[in-house]
Length: 298
Ligand SMILES: [Zn+2]
Image (cartoon, rainbow, N blue to C red; front, side, top):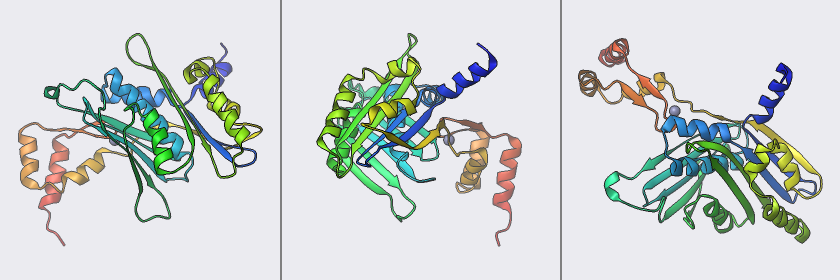
C-alpha cells in the first residue's frame, strides 16, 4: 500500500458520526462507527467483555443522539440496574467527544444477569435550557438497544429504529462498534417507514458493513429513502476534559488535614471516574496544594 492510500484508508476508518436527513425532511438518521472509542473505553477502564459491549453500545447511542444537537450541547445515556453491572454511563458532545464508564456490583452480590432490572435515563444539556431535559424509562432488555428504542417511543413519542452492533475478537476485546438511529419525523409517509423497516431488517450486521469498508456516511445514504442530505459528519474521539490541574483544584476543598493524611499514606493516585485516566501527585504537587491552603485568604 502506498503512503497516500494508507492515509486514505486511515481517514476512512476513523471513528465518525454522521447526521443525515431524507430529502423531504421527514426522516432523519444518525450513523456512527465508534470502534476506536469503544476500544479505548475498554482499555482505559480494563473492562471485561460484557461491560465493554454495553458501554460500547451506550457510547454509540449517546454520540448519535448528540449529532442532532449543536456545538457543546450534550447527551448523557445512563443505565442503572441491580445486576452485576450497576451503571453504564455514556456522555457525548455534538463536536465529537465521548466518554463513559461502567460500575460493577461488589463481588459478594452474586447476581447473574448483567444490568438486571432498573432504569434507562437520558439527559440532554441544551444551550437554551437552564435545566437538563431528563427522560426515564424502565429497562426492557438491559441490552441498551431495546431499552433505547423503548425510551424514544415512551418518552419522546418518536418512532425510532435503533441498531447498536458490537463484535469482540478471540481475546474478548472490542473488534468493531457501530450504530444506526432512524427516526420518523412528523409528515413521514408510510412508504418511507416501510423502506426503513425493510432496510433495517435486511441490512445484516453493521459490523459486517464496516469490515467490508463502508463508511458511516455511505451507510447513512443507504439507510434513508430517496436522496439523503448529510447535515454533519464529525470525527469522534474518546475524550475527557479532566486534567491533573482540575483534580488539584478539587483537592483544595478537602482541607489540609486530609491532604496531609493522603500524603502520609502514599495515596497519590487520582483516577478519573469518567475516562479512567490516572494522575499521580508528587511531592511538589502536595507542597503546592498545602501552601495554597495555608496562604492567608483575602
Ligand atoms: Zn477524565
